[in-house]
Image (tube, rainbow, N blue to C red):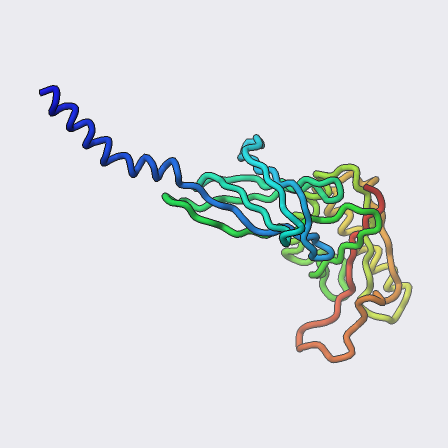
Length: 235
């Protein structure tokens, strides 16, 4: 009777061992590159991986010499916060959830590091304003949310908001338009927790010389809208 009991125990262990092994060995490999947001060149930074409570569970470094490559192993079906750390770049966090998998899987995610150097000029690729209007258009706040979060997480940074007009006509009208636009953006940052004394507003009466009105006629329904920049003045 004893021998049969031992035999059955061994058989059960053999049957369950693969499942137990799979549960232990199932990991997600998170890999990708980290690039400078302005130059798009690979950079070396520390990536801290935090759980939902903010506790650090993993850490790795990207390698600029290898194209900004990084690699770290995580648990499947788990939410993490990926934190960029480097004295020359904004401290930022990005949410990331690993897929549910019973075996090893690899996920690729690339990250952009915002340079934190006085004089850095961040061009907003999509204008938050409609043609000849100073009110922020629908969806603009969602697009700008990561930048506002970055400013909140880096309280020593001071910056200017520089807006340019849509037309090269009345200088007085252009000055008023760009002032109102910059103030609308300033209010957006302040509502999110950025101290108002960190923000300076710059109005412009003439078209941005670096991004002039296209010579060719735009497609129907599309009009040139003046460019907006975020310029770092103190870090």
